[in-house]
Image 1 (spheres, helix red, strand yellow):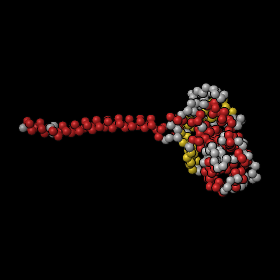
Image 2 (cartoon, rainbow, N blue to C red):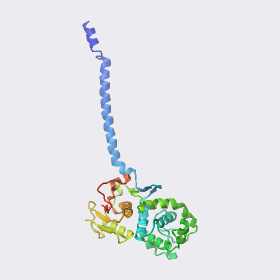
Image 3 (cartoon, rainbow, N blue to C red):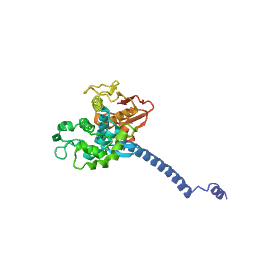
Image 4 (cartoon, rainbow, N blue to C red):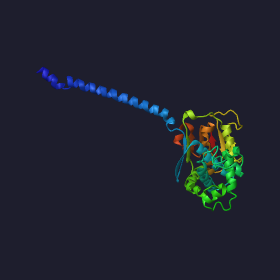
Length: 305
């Protein structure tokens, strides 16, 4: 009776009870192992994340989105910058984009059909200039716009007609197909819609900071009216501390976002690490995340590090 009473009072004792307790312990151990493994996988993912996206840019506006490589992004920003310097309307920029897409996919080509070179495949033999100048995106764009504004009523013409008057290509109708993409790019890079261009690249593609050279190139594209201040040096070849910064004064949000987009698309080439403007912040370490909130970023200046 005593044995029976003890067994009745403690029914979990015995072989089945021991297996149950061991099962609970193993489940707890397994849970800890899975948790630690998950933490390790997450930490590894965070370390590898900057590498997984590769390199590239993207424009995302109300008109849609368009992927670009780093060179295309930089060239697209340069086209808009030169238009700002020449104080041209957005329609001129759309025509330039459609032309560059057709001629070179917005790449600065070293050569092309016959003696054509550069983004717009301009020909030295046709009086456009020397090959070296035509391979310079700023000068090539400037020459394109100089020719475009000489076309009578170019703003009222069909895009392919205006572009053909400048390019004198074999089939000018081909430019028309790129008008939607031209409008999309112009919406972003002329600053009509804010924070619409982002670029990214992995840590092993980072370059040494050359912010003075970047700012001089920015002023060459946008024009000398662009005022640059801040503690960072502006003389070419000066030491460039990535922890320092410069401030580019802008007169309105459109020019501000054009400048900010130029800085982001040229960040990899010049080793720029951060851009701040109008409540937004872009970092090269998290370029794929695009623009994040920054309440301290003002509309008066674009801060570049």
